[in-house]
Length: 166
Image (cartoon, rainbow, N blue to C red; front, side):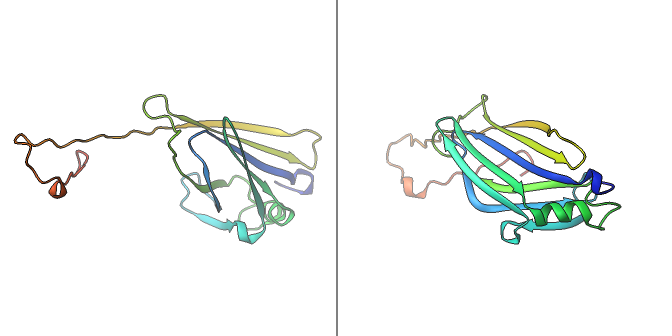
């Protein structure tokens, strides 16, 4: 983003989660960082700031969350002086919450979660896209305590789960 000729006129994300991972609505946060490790923060935006809009849809296959930058958001991305020119070469971290439900896939198959970034610049008549995906893995434990004499008090049974470091 070096001049008005390369300003972003569209910047949006489509996040698609497989059935079993519904989004918890109204909790999206966008954070901009000067570095790829997300340690040098420039700005934090919430939905209440009006710099982006979020919408949610669902169908039989899963859930879709759309994040679209508004004019005030695009203006800040394009013209901020927090770095050299706009938010050029910055890292954007999107934080949101989702909740696993009973239809989630448990085990090694995992649950898909794909995202598509779409952007357009003032000097271009086409849209660019960047696609990424991840898998959310869910595992469960089913523990049953059995007393050898059959007379134990189950109300006093406690399980403590820990990893090797604990």
